[in-house]
Length: 104
Image: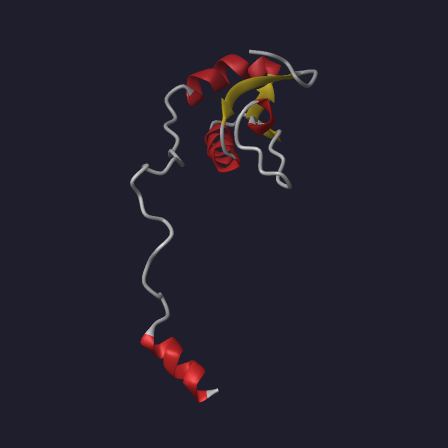
């Protein structure tokens, strides 16, 4: 594992910040300090390559213990099935909402 910040080591690299947060929660539960280094560009939404990496770092002296904890963590996938319809759906406005809007 590489050291990006002196005294800190990368314990895992993930695709999304919420995945890194889940790992940090598990490390905190084990008493290991951690931090997230996100290289995502939120303005330009770069989702691939080195500019999309989200790294979880721990103090170097806790790297081995942290590796043991994170090795079995299963993270949810964010990918959609190719045939999944995400664009069309029914209007989700309830009848109550429609009635309230009519009264205005």
